Amino acid sequence: NAGVTQTPKFQVLKTGQSMTLQCAQDMNHEYMSWYRQDPGMGLRLIHYSVGAGITDQGEVPNGYNVSRSTTEDFPLRLLSAAPSQTSVYFCASRRQTYTVAFFGQGTRLTVV
Amino acid sequence: KNEVEQSPQNLTAQEGEFITINCSYSVGISALHWLQQHPGGGIVSLFMLSSGKKKHGRLIATINIQEKHSSLHITASHPRDSAVYICAALLIKAAGNKLTFGGGTRVLVKP
Image (tube, rainbow over all chains, first blue to last red; front, side):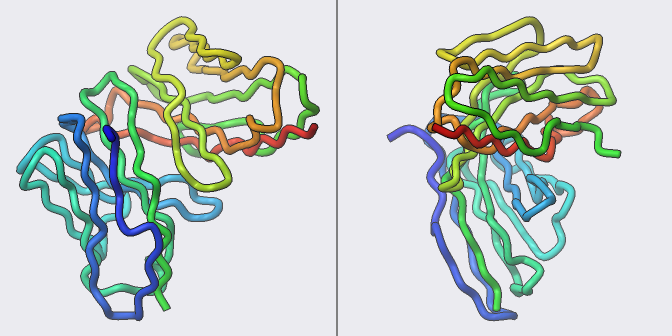
């Protein structure tokens, strides 16, 4: 099915562990981004990419890495999980600047 | 002050009522998105508009770029419209075509 596939849906990590949140889209979208959503804070941009091989930081990049080796995939890596990274994470993509955005189903991450 | 503000934060309506959600922004934008997030958490894009008005079913979105204001209207509201509605602006100054999000409006439609 066309769309943005985000995995896993739920994850519990211990402080200091690392993990990768996967995001893939099959719509040949140039623009992909990762957000975190916290109560009372709305959606905040972590990292984004405007095409394969090109990534940049958003508002809250610390503690996260990304790469974009292909157009389809945009994984988000947590290097050493901290309780402050407990959040719901969304991956999104869109084809160009003035097109609608498609969101993944979200990942609820808890760091204990 | 956030560059993108939504009002109200919460809204309760009776089934069948007309609902309006407002989004205002303080800087120049080139486009604005309206998103819907259901209690299950998934986010769906409803509209992307840069001028005028768009309609899809019972949903209508309008924007006045010069007045820096957009509205989302729900006609004949239904309990299944209960969700959080979020506006997101594409700021003209934004590097990398980033979106700036409003805080969301939580809508509850009672039967």
